[in-house]
Length: 605
Image (tube, rainbow, N blue to C red):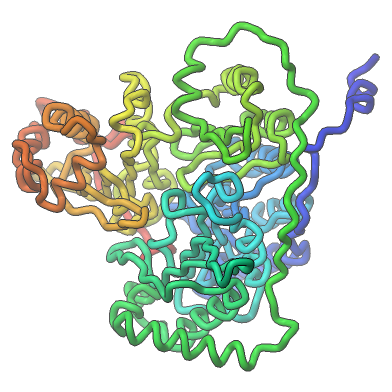
């Protein structure tokens, strides 16, 4: 029997299902190709083309107008096997043979020739995907916690609401020319989302009206965001009923569109508007605007919420035979899997290095998703990872073996070892350091030292940005870094400002600046902080709790404050002369002396 006949006779799998929504419009690809030609002919000026390009999800690439990064929108992070296969194909044909999973659940293809962007858009349309409004001054990808629907602490699944919101807002005239980009995050609970550091963050809630009646709704936070100046969001009201979700969203967007700062790019995110106006005044404005929206919107304007549960059917292709379990399985199981509220199932967080995944690994993930996920698709996460849910516990050893075969079985995705890093100087115009590579170096070192297996470090995070704009979310990390440059005489070296104590749960706070750390001293400094913690911790401490006490001045050991930490770390960050240590003056991934080169940013503020 030949391979084709065997494939035809193979029993159908529940996991081969197709997405219910086609997000694409093929005519946008043709229009993009036509507009590129006009731009090349000088018939469209650079600024107008730039706005058009961004609106269609093509982001500028470092120091050149001839290449773009194509950002593929993945609403709520839901991505299907045939979509993974298509992205693999596109990455080989038009990009660098790999893709990048971002912290906002998008998938990015880097170094695409500008004329090939439209070809990628056509390819995405084949599988119902789009890059429309993945960049630009509009509502970006609507995010949803990858644990929504399986979280043990959630009150109900927010995924259908996230999908409905994304569907309502995509190509909606309401948000095509906002003062600046705008972000929605849906979560499952306080722990597993980033609802307080975006423009609109939503956590599902159920309110009891009487003995028999329960009402679904949300806890909504407004005005948060990370960047050169960051803010934690404010809760709008105690409870927002689900029927008011759309009215609230429209009201906030209309206010931002109407009175947001369109002149000063450095201060035109909604968080600045909230800060300058004052929360009470902004809140009252939103509530009044919502009343007007509720009274004046047409009855046909509504969210199309599909609450029908996904069919959960265990794939039949997974072998149930008991074989030998490869080395490393117990460590992987402990540090990458989450026990779902559904009996017998786990969510598996597939560890990537700074979000990078090769074309061959994408294809392997497509097959693995078909073979192991009982819901038939994967979810992109908040930490540059891919999550397989509804994996039956008896299938986990076999899944580990399959991941091992394709280099995707690294442990530690749910621990401090899995550092987040933005693209940095590998592609970004604004970056000052190669944050992308530093995150990989930290991850590799931590796995080598088996720090991912240390329960005391499990709930801590490391996040790295290549500049102050916080694309790497450094301000909400237990230990955060953002890049810059420093000098010894005439010689420059890459440097990071380190912050401590950031968090994004119900006690969200921004990290406190501690010390500037040369790039080649970041790993020794982190390891020194861990050493100090081990020496001074209380019996029930974790690293994040210990650091939290330090930044609040509540610690009683030898390290009582951030200043004490700074004093202990200072000897580690003293730069040597270039003659003594020339490597110190080069960034990771570079064999030349460091210098700062930046271009015009497309993500600043």
